[in-house]
Image (cartoon, rainbow, N blue to C red):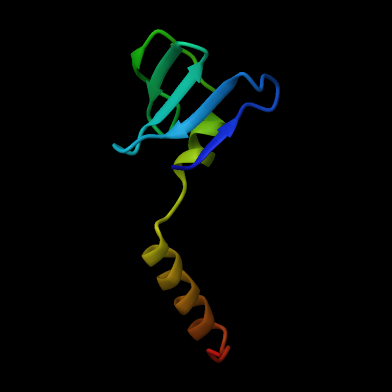
Length: 80
């Protein structure tokens, strides 16, 4: 799953969970947030909303292929 450490505190890990929410952990403490940074559950109650959006914005492979094909067709590029 996609994840990133916070740039100002590398001990804090932001990762996408199987439900599409963001799990923020710092050692044994954690919190679960929406992809907009709203707290759902857990001991950690604050998260960087920009990192939540960034980690949560990961389309699957099929979505990426579809987007690439639409871009190619729209701009007149040929597939190789």
